[in-house]
Each structure stands twice: as structure tokens, then as C-alpha cells.
Image 1 (tube, rainbow, N blue to C red):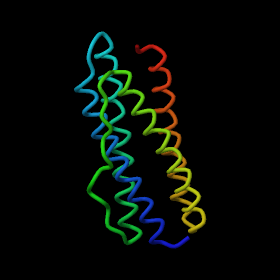
Image 2: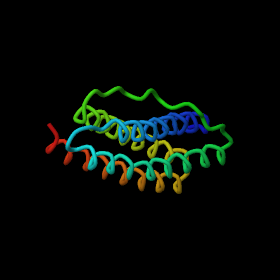
Image 3: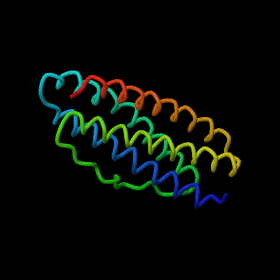
Image 4: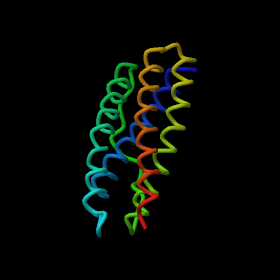
Length: 140
């Protein structure tokens, strides 16, 4: 594993965290109906974790000699509360897969501290995923 490949992967992860921040802000504002308050609170609460992940990634990319990206991945459109949660769930599942891959790359590169930090982020993202799964059971 070379440094450039690791930095490129971390930058893709950073773009995904930017996407998540924007998605959560947008969905919190767009939630409607009887579930609106609960969903808005859920989305708003997640922003802080995603922001912390983005800051960590940007600093790590810089420490490795790279330049952090400044563009998010596209934010998926959703026309209902259920679709919002489904889009978030899909993003969280994809993010977990990406971080598992990045953790393996970090270990291969020899940056065991990064691998450990990514494991913690995977735990955060797994909790987000599980919360989405619970919410989907109660949203029409």
C-alpha cells in the first residue's frame, strides 16, 4: 500500500462525510408530518459525529502530505421521511464498507494508529446504521 492510494481513499471518505453533513442538515429541515420532530432531532444529532469524522480525516490527510478535498459526494434526493431514512441507511452501509477497506489499507501501510481511529469511526457509523434501521420500522 502506497501513501498516495491511502490519501486518495481518505479523500473519498472525506467527501462522503461532507455529503453526510449536508444530507443530515437538508433532511432535518425537510422532514414532515407527525414524525418530523423526532426525525429532525435524529438528523441534527448525527451532524456532530460526521463533522468530527470530517475534521479527523482532513487533519490526517494533511499529516500524510495530502490536500483535503472540499467537495461533497452528491446528496441523494428523497421525497418522503421514509426515503430520507433509507438514503441515510444506504449511505451509512456504504460508509462502513469504505472505512473497513481503509482500515485494512492503513494497516498494510503500517499506520496502526489510523487503523485504530478508523475502527472507532466504524463503530460510530454502525450505531448510526442501527438507529436508521430502528427508525424504518416505525415510519410509513
